[in-house]
Every structure is written in structure tokens, then in C-alpha cells.
Image (cartoon, rainbow, N blue to C red; front, side, top):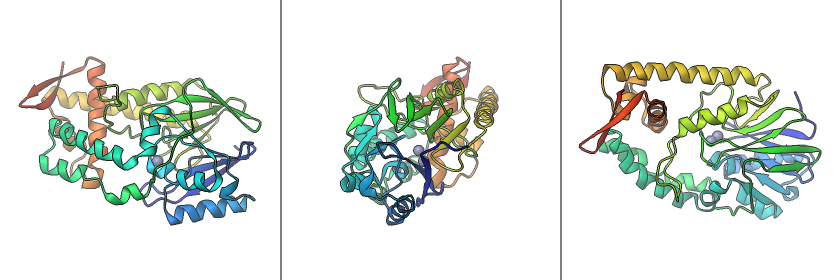
Length: 322
Ligand SMILES: [Zn+2]
Ligand SMILES: [Zn+2]
């Protein structure tokens, strides 16, 4: 399934997930949806794929950012510097794009305390919240020129997109839906073959409560489940031409795991860390944040449904079945 004027540009990343998918839309305006991380390899790949299509970076007129993760937006500043294009993202992404390193240092502070309250041993928390300096090199600062929110529409060539807010994987996640071709540009909200990973996030000022990422993710998945969808252009892996299968699998996966977690809580009260160790024994250090994101996510969902409740003992939070 192709949409005329849409080109798929896989861009390499240094991460385990592999390439990210950027998309070039002929326009006008000549548009990139996501760009890749700021690495020499990614830049060379973007340049050569643009050149195969008869373009160069200097021609780009706008860059849409699906969500503020460095594998997706890192090169945006470089593209903007060379092309003077507009960079467009969700309002909640603006600060992070402008100061990725500062954002992560604040996050490190927040998660230091939070993960201890979730039962994680202090030493492990220290290891986990140490921000690798090299990360900030992959995402130099970029100023956002325009923002998009739910209900906005954008015209790119003959394509007219509805903007959808899809928080969950990331709070500032945007999807772009084209009703004529029933195509969705989904960033990391929808990836064929990777179970969704709604990551732990710190509260976004003026909010003081941490966003419940998995609860939000499932609501966002419901939102795209209501669309007439033929093709999804994801942020990683393949372009998916049977999206209903992936959506159904995601709901099923969530339901099964939620039931498993509830059964565990019926046996004994657990901290989120304790739950993670039961769900994923011997998780390598590099995967611990993802593991905690998943454990806390399921606990949030059960609390939200009234099936679990929390109890605090010596500043550690325990979850128990109601
Ligand atoms: Zn992402
Ligand atoms: Zn990604």
C-alpha cells in the first residue's frame, strides 16, 4: 500500500531497536516526518536517500516530530540550520527539544527518589539514573517554530492530515491521519512486532502527578482503533498493512499481563520492583528502566480500575489486590 508522494527513509541508530523510519512527503511544503539521531551515519544516510529522490537537506521546508525521543528528532537542529525549515512538534515537546540534556538531568533527580519509593535498591537506582553524557550528543538543542495539538489539520501537497494526540509511549506523542488513503503516521505509538513500551515519565509542570503512561497509552490505542485504517507508517520496523492485527494483539497482550499481575497481587503485596523481578527475572541493567516502566504501568492500570490499592510503609509503596 503506497501513498503517492510519501517516501520511506530508514535511518540507522546506535540503539538496539535498529533503524528509525523517517518519511519524506513531496508536499509542498517538502516535509520530513522525523529525522533520526544526530550521528554521522544517520546524517549520511539521510543525505544519500534524499539525493536518490532528487533532493538535498537544504530543500526541506518543514520537519514534523512525532515525539521527543532522540532517535527521532536528534538531527532536526542540523536540518533546520541548513534548510531554514520549520520544526513542528507537540507543545509538551518544546522544552525537551530545546534542552534535552537539562530535561534528562531533571528527570534523573525525579526518578532517583521515585524508583527508591517503588522498592528498587538504592545502588541499582544510582546506576540506572546516571545519564550517559554521550546521549546528549545525539540530540543537540532545536527550537520548535510551530506546535500542533489534537484536532489541528495540516495540508501537505494533496494530502490533508488530522492531528491526533496519542500520549502513552511519550507524553508529547502525535499521530498524523490521512483519511483519503486511511494512512496513519504513528511514530512509536504503533510498531508491528514490538510490544508497546509506555515509558515512565516525570510530572509535566504545572502537573504535580506523574502521567500514568500505560493508562494513557491504552486510551490512545482506543483512539486509533476507532479510525478506518489501511496502513500505518510506524517509527520503527515495517510499514504495516494490517494494522487491526497489531492493535488486537496489543490489547490482548495487555489484558493477559494485567490478569497475571493481579493474580500475583492476590498472593502477596508487592512493590513495583518486586513485581518487575517476578515478571522479568534477571533483567540486564540496560533493560531495567523498561522493566520498571512496564511493572508500574500495569500497577497504575489496576489501581485505576479499582482492582489494586497502595499502602506505604517506611516510604516504600506496596501494591495489594483490593
Ligand atoms: Zn520513542
Ligand atoms: Zn523510537
